[in-house]
Amino acid sequence: MRVIAGSARGRRLRGPSGDQTRPMMDRVKEALFSSLGDRVVDARVLDLYAGSGALGIESLSRGAESATFVEQSRGALDALRSNLSTLGFEGTVLASDVAAFLARAEPSFELVFVDPPYRLSLALVGEVMEGAAALLANGGIMVVHRQAGEDAPDAPASTRLQDDRRYGDTQLWIYQKEAS
Image (tube, one colour):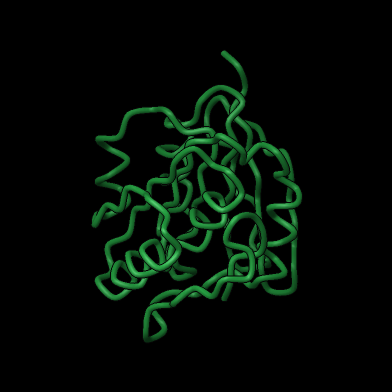
């Protein structure tokens, strides 16, 4: 696992031990960030179920203004903090359950990654998406990473499904918040 582009291009990331997290494959991450393009630059990023922090760190490497990482696994938090420190990036790391974070967070993000464990039901993913969509700025993007073969969840209120991509056994759904 590595940073694909930007100021930390090619740098390796530490992953947590065990099988509690499943990082996005480098080729999928590269395709995703290529599709996001300049939307990452100066964005305030939220990385839910952050794991090692690979998505938020990739965003910081590509010029994001800030990144907030939400993760509850101790091993993943250790890897995430180590990755930020090793790369010299700053980010807000919150040791929290995603639902608890969403219940108290203030809206202000241009880019939100929702990367839950595959074992989390699609119904619960839909609930998380509703909460995450409420935190998006107008025109903001939410990327949902799941195992391929599932139907896209309904678009949360005030968002629309912008893209649906499959890469092998990985599915990415990209939603955009409509201007109000």
